Length: 130
Image (cartoon, rainbow, N blue to C red):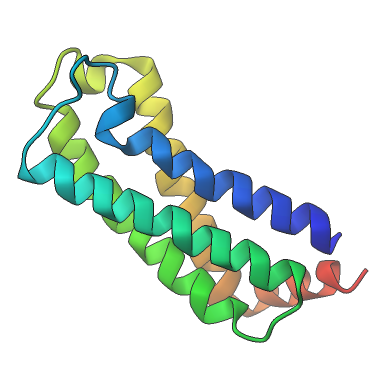
């Protein structure tokens, strides 16, 4: 189960690339300070979730603070993404953009709950021990 959890975490984290300007569906990609913030935060989330996946897979003790920081960074990336994507067509009217937005927001909240909720945390640790 530890390997499956690590793969799932890594795959979720890698999807933060979808929030970068390169995936905005524009050629050339949109630019500006806001998109730079989105790119930096999204890439930081990718790195954080990759480190989290490694820590879970190797059963390292520091996985919890990394999960917390990665989830917060992921949520922080969603805010400028929403503002930046509103500046391009079709913006938030595109179903793919909405799916991208909600999957990352809800996924990051789920990770936060996993770390901060005693019941969810205990369940996850128990699953990892199987």
